[in-house]
Image (cartoon, rainbow, N blue to C red; front, side):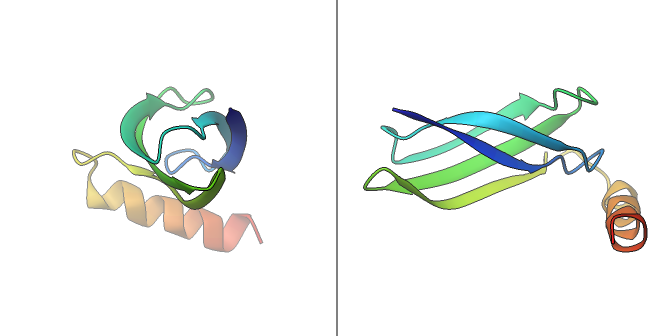
Length: 79
């Protein structure tokens, strides 16, 4: 069974979604944003067909200045 999970891209802050396979208890993989095409790390855990943890984060090679820029953007322009 699959579930569409909505979240905000860690790079461009646009709302996007991925399909989560609820039959897999735990998964971590890299997927590109459908808006900005930049890679993000998707991590999730499932228990009894429910998502108990979902994270979309920068990949390991992302620089800190980009993280600060996104935080600034979300805090000041998304409110």
